[in-house]
Amino acid sequence: MKAGLRRTRRTLALLVVTLTGLVVAATALAAAPRSTSPPTVEGTYRQGSTLTTSNGLWANDPTSFTYRWQRCDSNGNNCAVIPGETARRYRLVNADVGRTIVSLVTARNGDGSDTANSRPTPQIADNTTPQNTREPSISGEAVVGESLNADPGGWTGAPNFQYSWLQCDAAGSGCSDTGTRGRTYGVRSADQGRTLRVQVRATNPRGTSTAISNPSAVVRAAGGGGGGGGSAVSVSNVSLPDRLVISGFASTPFRNRTDAVTLRIRVSDTRGRLVQGALVLASAVPFGRVTTAPETATDSNGIATISVRATSRLELQAGFAVQFFLRARKQGDNVLAGVSSRRLVQVPIAPG
Image 1 (cartoon, rainbow, N blue to C red):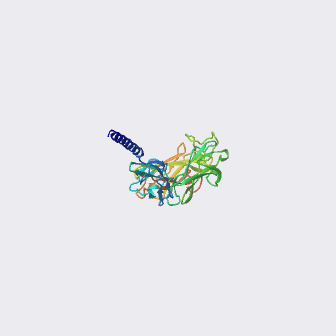
Image 2: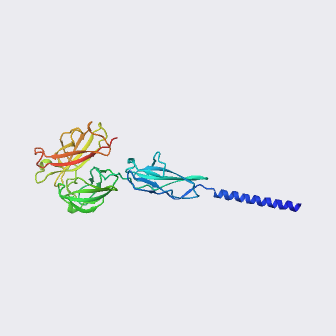
Image 3: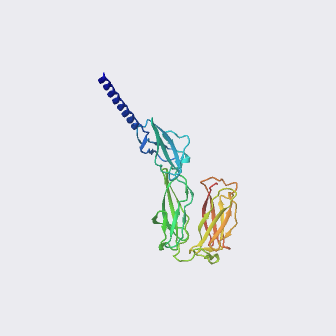
């Protein structure tokens, strides 16, 4: 009987050890899903197309997946959940143009859940060929040895840009390709007495468009005059064959119909000298969408400052611009002749 009791005790001890081991093993196996490779987003990155997310790869045997989509800025930052989009596929809409998209995949099993996100997509393109809404521009001093920088201007269609620098005559005509690419141009001695333009080539999946900046100021030698700071010559000293050149333009945007929009127009001559006393006219095209302003004389820095306001006829729609006809002339000259100069520019509309 004692032997039987001992056998029973040994059996119970083995059973306890076995049960303990099973509990430990079960505890070790219990684990929520863990991402080992993030999801990826496939498709055409253009408005109207549909993107599809993979689940990615997971450890610990997920039993189900759920999905969300985020819209981020053009650099893949500042993301926000797109309301109502919980399917594995997402159709791109107009609000996505110029932005990037991220998918979030949540994996679940009986022990919990975890979420992994994809890398941001490339910028989403419009479903149309790029269209220029604000002309390219050039900043920097047109002086031998200095650098000029290109701004691509405004475009629809979320394009990529390529830049070509052109050398032109003093009036901004007769241009030829310098062979320089990129946003920066180093001004050379061969450019002296001439002007420079930048041509911007904008491309998205639907096609390509180009736009060309207005000319720079006439390039002058390092240490030469005409740089501003009250060094302008009088317009009375500008005579044919020299002519006036509208060599610079800057403005604030149209935001409403109350605040004035300031136009700053720089006038030089074909020698590269800033000009004081030139009469500048700025007229919106078509007429009537902007208040009229009288001719304004350039100051000792060669700058004419003109203020205008939007009228009720101007539609304040973001992404559009107002075109202005600019004219610079010498007092007493025929407005269509003499040393006068003309240029078309655009002022952006940015309601706010």
